[in-house]
Length: 329
Ligand SMILES: [Zn+2]
Image (tube, rainbow, N blue to C red; front, side):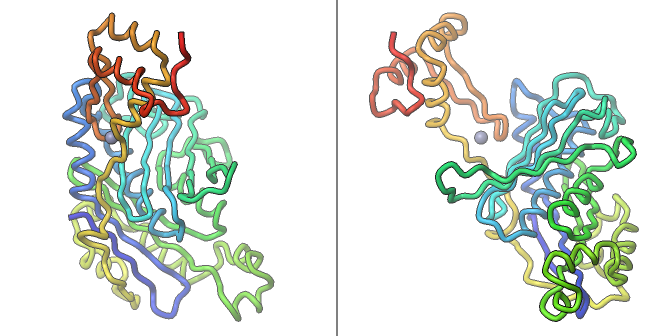
């Protein structure tokens, strides 16, 4: 079962999390492979999407936010788009759009950042929005301060966290066909007396970037974690091996009902609205060409089929007419 573990370093301003997506991840891969149109991911794409999924679960679990967290890479290269969406209860889904061949050992930039034009976007979409409210979005490039392409997704996201939260963060990510896993270590914001001593609020936190010796020591230990270790060790062994000299306080593990899990919120109703949005003429021309309208969900590969009778019903039944209904002809 997939699991998420939170922990603190006793007496130090540092916290951490480990996520291991097992069934949640293999379900995403299984559904993709079962799709007749999309097909199995090339290995480098699979591993990139797995790392994104682990990272998005960690980021969602790390914030107190009632809404979905969406991590996207707008690629420029054979992978046009990679998306992970995680709900506050850690229900998650992920998909990637592959438009050309991907080499066996393709790097991150070979997949999504050939000419340094790829982007990574993190969107926080609140559940309850006031009228006109837009989701919050942060966009970071896939290159460093010197314009050099970044080859590790973890580095891209560490930079985002530093920008958005003014907090030092270390991420280690890895994925294969069985598991998507991640370790997050983060410096905690100073509170109370610490803030008063250092100045006001975020000022004090910004001043602390890179300066906490405790954080720096633990971050170095975290970075020593090898991909293979992250993919093979259970969490107890992993934390003991990395932080055996530190005092780690574990919190209750999120398992079973609270654990990260695969879930897709697509529905026939949404597809109906989409077809209505196309308009009667367009819908009929698809029917003439193919006999049925078939729409597959990119996240879960469920096929929604509409034969001529279903389609005709859509356009006459007033209850199914949404605001995006067809224009009458
Ligand atoms: Zn779906």
